[in-house]
Amino acid sequence: MRVGLLISEFKDKNVCDMCLGADIAARDLGVELVIFPGKYIITDKNFSDDNPYEYQYQAVFDYIYEAGFDGLIVDIERIGNSAPILKKEGFLKQFGKKPLLTVTELEGFEKVEYKKDTPYFEIGFLAIEQILSKVSDNKVKAKRKSIKEFTAEDVISVNSRTSALAKLSSQCNYEEDNYDLIFKKIAQAGFKNFEVFLLESPQICSMKKGWKVPKYSKRIITIHDGKADKFDKKTDMETSDIFDLSKIKGTKIIRNVFRGEEQYGLFIIGFEDSVRTGTFDDLITSIVLSGIRMNFLRKRLIDAEEELTQCQEEIARDGSVLDHIGDKDYLTNLPNRRGFFTKAYDLLKKDFKEGKYAVVAYIDMDSLKNINAIHGHDEGDHAVKRVADILEEVFGKKSVCGRIRGDEFAVIEVTDEEDKAEELRIEMARQNNKLLMENTKYLNHLIYSICEFDYEESLSLREMLKETDDNLKNMRRMETLG
Image (cartoon, rainbow, N blue to C red; front, side, top):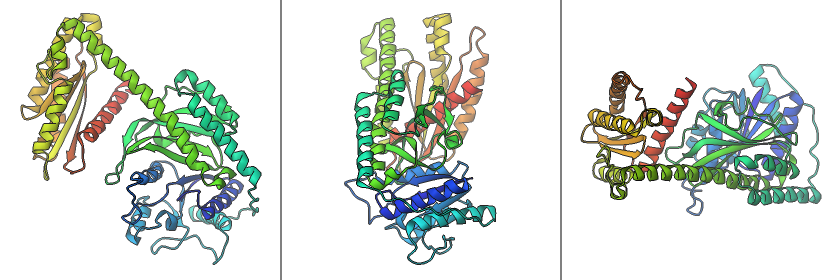
């Protein structure tokens, strides 16, 4: 049985005591307990310009939705510290019909039963017993154990371990060749159960719109019982399966890792007394973030190098530098990457207003590399021109259509018509089938993503393009798996 315990943060001694009590009861009763430290519901009262991204911690709770939790225990009083009752209610209702107990009283929700002045570690015991009874309809009882005192020596031990991991973060750059070294160093620092997951790509999470947890993640580090487990680092896993596939048994803590508006990934760590130091949890998160960011920055550098090489090849073939530093693609006569973004920003500024919809599309010529390799670049150029003609036919002259990379096109259109994207998807499917049938020498195959966005003052072109690009990556993955 899997139970989620939703808390604010470990800097609160009462919260630590409650988690320690819940951990002891869960282990005794054979419950997999997952602790979610998500800090606080952001309101006008506690929002700070000094830390405008404090709301990002709450994104950790979104990993609950599709995962298999049998019950939830929520410390709503602390999570909703400054929030009005309606916000607290809304927070709890988002988990749907999952069996749920609150630590403190809130009308309309069932509360953990305990007497006044009950110690917090005992409340943790009771919470686990009562959520199990609620789920199974059988009264259960855990063996009581006292919580040992946390000594000065314990604090020194925790500090030395986090210092060792901080040093590791500065020494290792999380390149694939360095994974074995990282495993060894983390184990040496005393972390016996530790897993790090990367999202498919950094995901925008805004206070107004929230975010959507990507379907796929990649596990890049696993330490199990003090030893590195071997696994295929190139294999993606469904994010909803992270708890099912976790090697960490017993009670665990999950933390999301973010910077600014971007969610990067998460880590899971086996629960231990170290949380009592208060700063332990945040320090570990900061260290993991530095490593994950380095991983993404390295990937972006590789992508940029590949794009530069591609541009150099095109310039060498075409011999016209001016076409590449201008705003037009020499081959299709469409705007190039620079020209597309210039025209797209102008279009949004002029036409994207209340009551309007922006349709954004990414189109990938999935077969271009094979066409070039087998039939030559002249035939590849012909295929590119044919796709450009199709896009102008499908999207029309009111849209901005550009060739942003050798095999990628982007389109943006502002319209009064709601659900215009669906109409365009149908037409693109028709044209794609036509394109596949019209050439007997090779397949000119397109993978495309078309997304529609309601007007919002805060919605940026970057966010729209990112969501559309993420959708296209999923399409590519499905094509590969299919």
